[in-house]
Length: 256
Length: 256
DNA sequence: AAAAGGCGCTTGTTCAAACAAGTTCACGAA
DNA sequence: TTCGTGAACTTGTTTGAACAAGCGCCTTTT
Image (tube, rainbow over all chains, first blue to last red; front, side):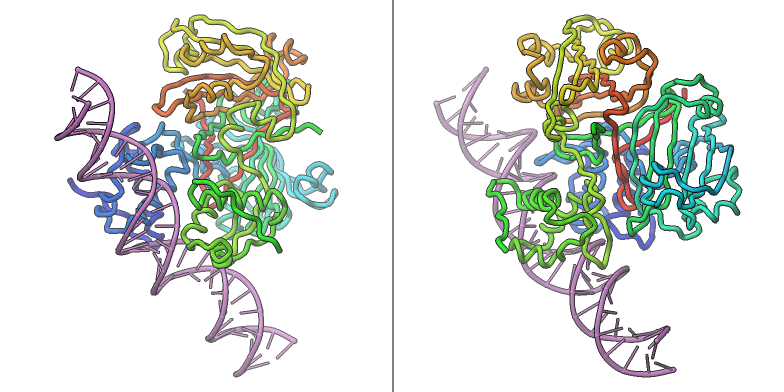
């Protein structure tokens, strides 16, 4: 059998291995429920030490791709693919990762003073200037989500010189060297207001799935705050947890 | 300063360390935004090698509790506590972990044949017998969630001999030795139907946050399937991701 | 035939060492 | 004063080794 070749990059070995292993699973080379080669075999196959192989396997394990315990080789778990950072942060990236065509129609872009609630969420003073964008997003032409984005001026100002209907804000910002490092996503449900209803073509009061996102840079400053409302029959969120692994997600009560 | 003492158990060292570090953070000994002691100091403090300390830190890192990169000690992240398995799987455990009093009123328990859709989700044949439970859950007396649980007979039958209003089904089942090993949670939004409305005391059509859960045992068999509907102003879900760490959660499109 | 034991396999845990790569800070040159 | 250089320190990567602990299977014993 011809051995697939690891891509030659300058990334660390354990990272290349985890990517390679993940590919073997998505391509069906290692099938769901099947058991992996032993660590010793993987070491020999790639000429690395056991620690490195274990580091790569640990990555897949915490993504939920691998499971199983001591004494026998790990099993390929129920294949709930995990989501890389970019594809969780960017609608455009997400669509592309699904092989679908993202669409966007910008309904508004404005600079205005932040309202009290928004300012509080973003850690600004009420009235501080923010750039706000309202966009309707679609998948393969089907309207799917209404996005209300608020950006701090440093990040938002360059957007006035960007064709918002042409693609990804996330992509544009990263290409400008902005370091979007961390996202915090809060998920709940809301009833469609008049704006949601007219944009998404539904009735007022329809239940929508809402994802509120705060995007931070490396130093913990808020760069962006968004309120994305999905048609719940077109998209939802899935998470897996096991007895061994704490879920990185929590359920939060909102009682005063 | 008196050094806190690690609990003496038979758990592996890296696990004891990660628990100990997590405590230091929740007690405020290590504050949010603050920087940890260097790995070398932690090694010396606990008399272990660097690999072991790094393993403990990696645990907190993947939970999102720690962040920060090469060259400087890790920072205590925005303290979004991660959620252990039990507290994500069980409403009762969750309430207790918040210092709140869980309440439950059982509206129905029945054994009946599974409908086609439910059977499909659980991997059963339509008409296969399942035990179904309908319970209203509350936090500190405030109705918060309506739970529709369906159990395979092996798991559901013991529930007929259990006082469902007295506490946790999850706790009862684990005490019976059932191995609930893995959960898969799907989150979306629904409009309240007549049953939701009357139980939760809201109007029909109100937007509810829905968590559908499939619980598996070690061998991948479905043990339970539930449909929990939260009042969205009382509870929601939060997840964090960073450029380094893939989120264990994914956003899924539902287009045919 | 069934239970018990042991052997070889696997993964889990821990240590020690070395080098690579990024950060911080003080010192010296322009 | 400012800028850059470099030393000291930090975390990241990788190796090699050893032992503990769990699993499967075969053999032996009851």
